[in-house]
Image (cartoon, rainbow, N blue to C red; front, top):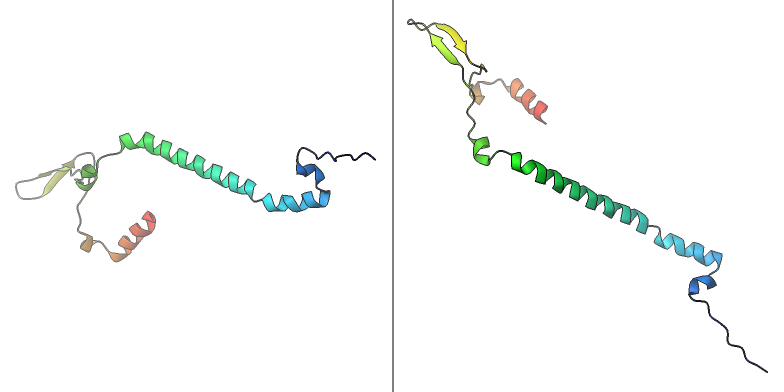
Length: 113
């Protein structure tokens, strides 16, 4: 009587039945969405970093932003104090925040938000 050794396949997947393969697949389905999410996060981070690197050199300094001096037009008055004319690119009048009506303040905040 000759004993034969059973030859085992290269990997154990060949031994799995269809039912066993079907139960293995649902355990690994979450890998694909997780990989997609990680890829999108890395791509988004790289895109934001690239945009920041391009825009950063053109941004103004903090000192320029905090020291705001609006352009005031040249006003010409007569000898008795009457306004003759205003000359300039922009005609602005500086107003204290207390003098601005409450509804206008709320409208400005609503437009900014």
